[in-house]
Image 1 (cartoon, one colour):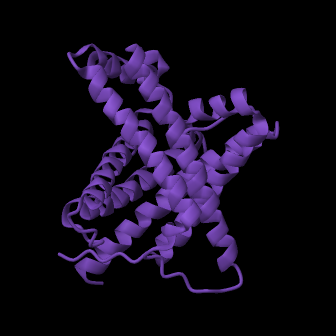
Image 2 (tube, helix red, strand yellow):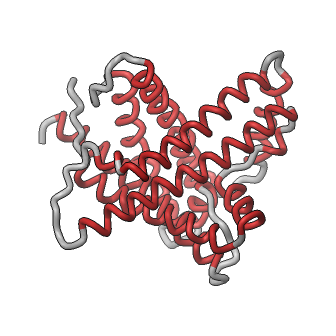
Length: 263
């Protein structure tokens, strides 16, 4: 196997790893909506669940290594423009988004490695909150945080549009078969649901920036709470099932996505 093919397969492994995480979040949270499980999930909780399983530490390390492949692919998209997005404002925004995605999943990979090596450690949320407090106290920090919040909200709506328009199929050379339509529907529901969650998380960030209050920052689990408290458990369950669909589609994407890492 040549070097280019090895790097491509490493990127595909990263997409598979991302799919595993989203399948766990969607499955466990949808079970919570049905009363079969008392726990809503976010990425950190999903990693802790994996840690508690037999050979959990090994599984976490494998997932973390896989995520490094996803990070590498996103960096190629951001820096080398392997998707030929171009240089207009929309293309630049997309490439910045790829770079931001790489940073987010780098933090996830580091967390997974630390959890595998050191086990669950208290104070993770407090440390994150302390960083946000310092940023909000910095002159103009709330404006910076507000810009980040708006970017997250826009990203959420872009994900929803991507699901509605089925643009997520771009570059996915999926062989048509008996289940092709079902996988496409899973992707549609998945991208729309992920967009809903991102938009709500962005709203939390925006409120934190406006009120200069780090306590208002919440993640995926907070978004599920928001949906349940304001719209009921049914909608929360539907969004969770959508994220399960997103995770399933990541396995299809990992297999059939066109990845041309020219170097």
